[in-house]
Amino acid sequence: MVQPTASGNGPQGILPAIDTRTRLYGVIGAPVGHSLSPAMHNAALQAMGCNAVYLAFHTTDPAGALAGMRALGMGGLSVTIPHKVSVMAHLDEMDPLARRIGAVNTVVPREGRLFGYNTDCFGALAALKERVDPAGKQVALLGAGGAARAVGFGLVDAAARVTLFNRNAQRGRALAQALGIEWLPLEELARHRADILINTTSVGMHPDTGRMPVPADCLRSGMVVMDIVYNPLETRLLREARAAGCEVVDGVAMFVHQGARQLALWTGRRPPVEIMRRTVLACLT
Ligand code: ATR
Image 1: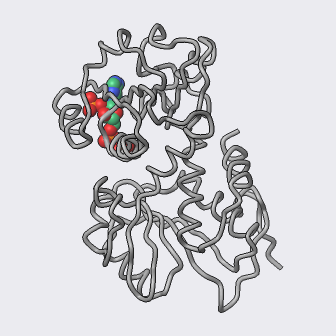
Image 2: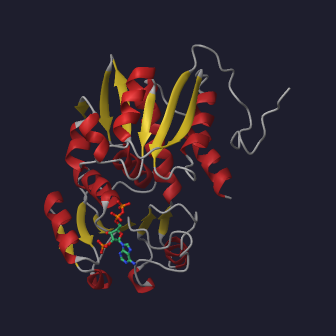
Image 3: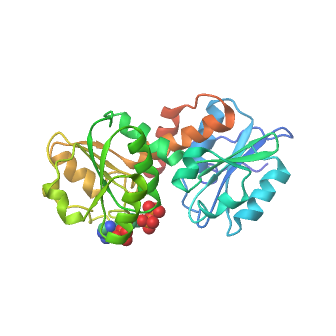
């Protein structure tokens, strides 16, 4: 008899009983080899008692993947880089927030139709709200890529007073205009009195772990500093922020909450957030 190995079966190490009623979920992207979504979602699905498995699919063909999802009756899909924008053309309906953000990371099947959602936005706000309610707070948002766009719409909707800081002026101005907020060059950050600082750039991510997106003198005691980078778990930005007396929110919090929102959309049930967090942390440490 072939025994499942721990390395091939995630940190939980237990395969569900697979039969003809097992629901299939997954993530599409390129690459997906390092995705933590399968470990996180399988741990959650098992804890919820769902007869389901979640797999990673490396594909450069999002249209084909969605056709396959329809044909096979899959329970749901996560969508990651580089398909978050291109996948939209192959959906039947878009959630209004995902439409405003212009990116989809979650596909939900309902009565034969495919609906697109963006749970990155929800994930970022849920992670931040574990520490602070951003309503009325001065927020410095760093970056102007897809992640900044998702987080920015969430912050604006939550009535935060957001200023966008980005290295590239053209990209910074364009996103600030779409969000209806002000853009400033990164060099202005030290003069800006932010209550909350959120890094959405990739600066500090493995393997460049010695870098941080802002000088340490921008970090003041009492600030809440959030980094969406989760590899390493404690980025240099978060380490320096903690040393300066700031409260910190790591990237795992956002990752876990965006995944929990996906599961809630797929199953209509409350996901086990702490089990998901523990599973991701076990993969990272
Ligand atoms: P994503 O879609 O994941 O947000 P992206 O579109 O590549 O990724 O955006 C990355 C963001 O990180 C951009 O805002 C980029 O700044 P520019 O618009 O100036 O290119 C920012 N970024 C990346 N490396 C940076 C660095 N070394 N210093 C400052 N900002 C950086």
